[in-house]
Image (spheres, one colour):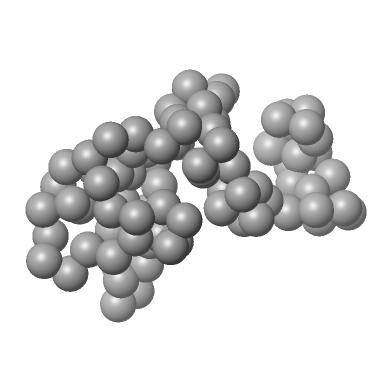
Length: 85
């Protein structure tokens, strides 16, 4: 799995927040995002900081964004990836 750029919508415009690296084993906020006056954390469990977050810190937040059940199966089939990926 490739690194994933994480973005959030800000006034209907995507804003790059950071990157989810190495098959989901770490997440880092981008330096540019951290330098913004109006930067806010993705979650209280992922406060703004320069240091990367490891799996134990990021897992609950990012897993909560993933579809489950039939929606997950359909998404995996559409993307042609394993359902567990």
